[in-house]
Figure: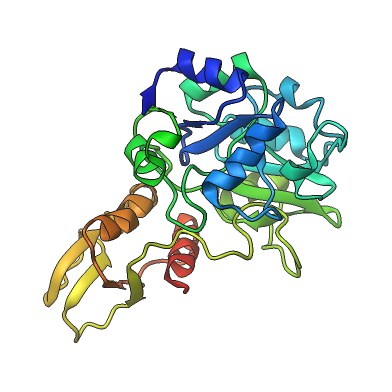
Length: 306
């Protein structure tokens, strides 16, 4: 069921759950004022309780009740990437942030999304938790129709069009005097290095999720995904500027010269494999391994994992 922004605000302010658009993926939103709505988000998604949520706000001032220390470079990162596709994990004010949102951790993940309609909703509702609006483990939703496909009429959706980024936010956490990447995403290490002065490494050694996207199988269609074998005929997930002579069908992610477009198309292509009833498909892994391509590779690796 599609709704407008006025209806979204009314539902959220009365304890409802609503799907909202962002520039990355659609999110399943609930107000921090309603613990029962937050619990409904977990149950609707089938999300494990030890997987923390991200708090979304419209402006930095809305974060004041929920966080304590602001680590070095916080202001620089916020000025450069907010509103936008960066999430920061900060020390939480545990009295203000429900345990279920933090998954019992002393930290909380926060972000200011860039989508104008959702920012306006946030101005009127205050802070919202907003994990991706898909069934847990499945490809994220990048259109309103994807949300409807997963939840039917159980979740009203504010249709904000296709998500421009198409891949989740990058998540940074400050540990041992350095920012490290807890989840690869739409912001690349190269972009972050320009702001913090060093290339953040990937986090290692976590025994439980510190943020969304860790440890669990994610982004997976029902279609079995295998590495491309050029001698076998079959469905190929590949690129529109490359030839696949014996493919029975090609699901094109985009051009190799346009990684941003490939990222934007990724989840829609994975979902279309399921919609079309494709039992198995071959992935063309022959693409670069730096910048945004590194995130695309990580998402496809998780989508291929069974």
